[in-house]
Image 1 (cartoon, rainbow, N blue to C red):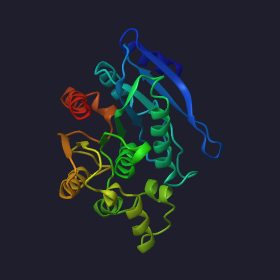
Image 2: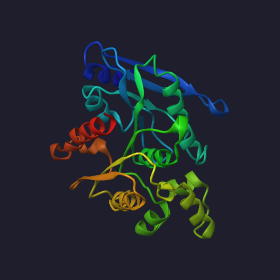
Image 3: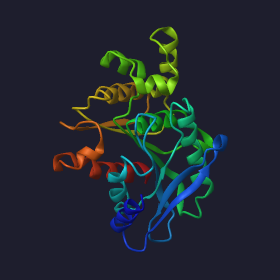
Image 4: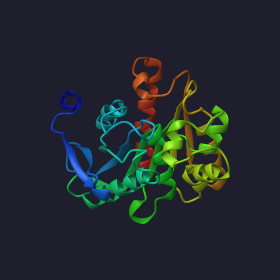
Length: 271
C-alpha cells in the first residue's frame, strides 16, 4: 500500500499535496478513511469524490480507481478517494450512506482542502458506479452534487438480472436476497438508481465499454434515456470493444480517450 501511495505521488504535479488515510466517518464503530489530493494554488478548485468498485464486497480507496488519479490531477481538480462499508457484513444502503457522508465531510472541510462546494462531482466504477448513480439521483441539500460520472454502473438491477439470467451472488449478498420472487424484485427496484430519476438531478456522463460481460452495456443507454425523458441531462460515452474494468483498459491505447472526455466534460459541466 505504501509503494502504491509513493507511485501515485510521483505522478502528481509538483507542489500539489496528497493526504492519506483521513477518517471521515465512523458508522457503528467502523472507521472509514479517504485520501485527498489538493492541487497547487489558492483555489477554490472543482472537486471529485471517487468511489471504487469490487462487487460491493471487495476493494479499497486505492484499488481499481488509480487510473483516474493522474488525469484528474492534471486537469486541476481536487479529489477524494474513499473507503466504504462492504457487503455482506453491511447490507445496502450502508454503502450509499457512506458516500452521502463523504459528501458532507468534504463540504464541511472545503476551506481546508480548497474545494468549491458548488463544483463537486461524483465518479464511481462498477459497484461504485451504481452508488454514485444512486447518490446523485437521491442527494439533496447538503448531499447534492453538481455532476456524476458512473463507469459501467448497474443502474437497473432487475433489468441486469434478466439480461444475465441470474440475480448474481454479489447483488444477493448486498441486498440479502435468498431467492427470486416479488420480494427480490422489490429490493432490486428500491436499490436501483433508475427508480429515482427526476428532472432536478445533476447531469450524468456514463462511460461504458461495449464488451462488458459483468454489467451489460445497455444499462447506461437505458438510464440515460430515462433521464432525458424526465428532463434531466445525460450523455453516454461508449468505449468500443472495452471489457469491464478501467484497469484492463490501461493496456489498450484505443481505450484511453475516456480520460480526455472525462476531464473536458467535468470542466464544461462544473464551470
